[in-house]
Amino acid sequence: MSKFPVKISILIAGLVVFPILTTSYLKYTSQVKQVSAQTPTKPAPQEVIQLGEVRPLPGKLNNIPVFNSNSPEWIKTEGILLSTFPPQAKKNPAAHLNFPFQGKFDLFAHHYTHTPKDLQTLYIGVMVHNPSKQPVTIEIPQAASYLMTQAPFVTLPPYQENSDAKAFSGPGARAVADVLRGVRQANFPAKLVIPPQQSRMLINLPIPVRGLEKPVNGRSSFMHLNSSNKIYVASMAMFAKKNIDGSERPPNLAEWQNLLKNGSFAGPRDKIPTPPDAVSGSLIYGRVAGVSQGSQWKATLTDKNASILNIPQPGKAISYGLVTLRGGRLGTEQNQTAKMLVRYPDTAYEAHGNYGVEYNLSLPLSNNTSKNQTVSVTLETPLKEDKLSQKNLRFRQPSLDFPFFRGTVRLIYADDSGKKITRYVHLWHRTAQVLQPLLELKMPTNSKRNIQVDLIYPPDSTPPHVLTVKTR
Image 1: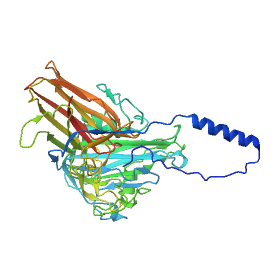
Image 2: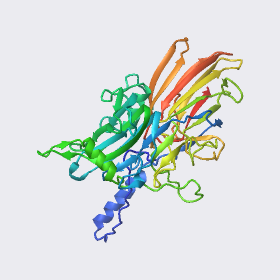
Image 3: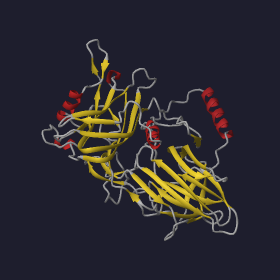
Image 4: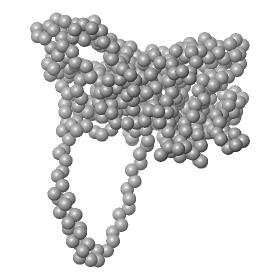
């Protein structure tokens, strides 16, 4: 999983040594050395240990399937991204996974392009097909799609109140935040009726690059869907077609159908993932292209065999792993990653990162101490470990400079006066960053408070994280 929207290559230039011919050059290099010697060095980063325990997250993913189209992430050649159609009568049967959807399912499509030939506009198309002899209705309660130009990757404060939905960093984070709020964008209908044995386009949207300072753009789409009967779904990439006057137009349904029937995989292909049984070498998660199992994780965070969560002792913390995965279980031995029901052989074995998975977490806090306490709740990103080397979570000051969580969370709680509050807060956190609390509340002795933390895990974030309760 990339930490940035653009893959970065580090080029090491060759060192060319020229003869030193003049005393003036020697004098110049001596001055440079003197200046360098006077430049103060940065202090070494300090490791910060968070005392407490790390617990696995209660609950589990539900069984709702997710059409998960994220490979290749960067598209240069048009073709099929993900097809769950039957392979029969297709020129490239291996591109079709034969998985029908019925009832509730989610759709996630997240792709970028850069410097296409002649700066052509790339279109992302999602086709749905009704194989039956009766009409099928697809309900679309929530749906959002954004370009990177509509939601650029920008640096934001660690916390920003987001009741107006104007804080975002990246198209995926903006799309899932809309769905978390219950939004269906105006360009998506509430229902789509597909006649018997016909197909319709659910998405036919552009990724334009012409006129941009840098010819780089992307589109992220996320939807909750409900189909009245079996349907097949395919996501594809195709460059805009030309009108007679040379202007661009979107591909039409017949052109998408032809690509589905006669086309092959879009490219270039992403890195081959590391098999789950590998015991050595570097761990490559790979990008996801397939149907994953699980759209939502509901959990009530309590002590073992209890209905409450007793707050920790002052100065201590209780942390619950969030989006833990192979190689990053933070000592919990829990892999929360959604399993793949069907996938292409060169794509991820699991839905690493759980992009688009909704977490609904309830914390029934109890202060069973003899004193009034101040309790905080924080979503944070410790240094990634599988087994905790020091039995506690580790952070750094200063933090590493990579943004590992950027997205919106919803908080529902009663404030210190008893008033019910619902807040949306945008988080922009670097890895291993020591943070101020997301929420801080006063708890009198023998009192209880319930806090609800909801989020849809935002694309272009990098797990694992923890949800931490701490007593000041």
